[in-house]
Image 1 (cartoon, helix red, strand yellow):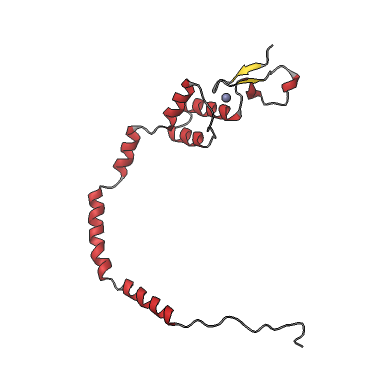
Image 2 (image 1 turned 180 degrees about the horizontal axis):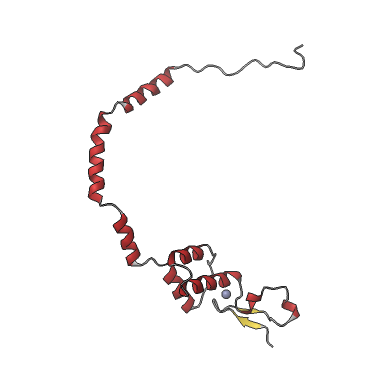
Length: 150
Ligand SMILES: [Zn+2]
């Protein structure tokens, strides 16, 4: 049996044989994938498309796999894009969750006069001035040699 294989995900050619002693030390997933990242991506995509992972979970897992530089085949690429892509419905949900911006602006308008009238800032400024007025005290202490100081 030929030990030449092609990764299911990235189509990289590599050598592995599940029946040869030479490859005994290598993991069994080598039968299908050339590297662990490909195997991980496969598991995540399978989990997502079989309904075990929600899109959010799948996306997070996918982002944790270092897939930089791996050229997946087109079918896999599409699936990855699908998982990573945030749908317009999801974006709309996020948008709708944000409180109406008019309410926020009204809130700011109400706070502003309170801040302006508050004496807190003036007091803070006074304290700063006081701190500056205090003269620095020398922190250098005379060195006492304990060994000779009987
Ligand atoms: Zn691969």
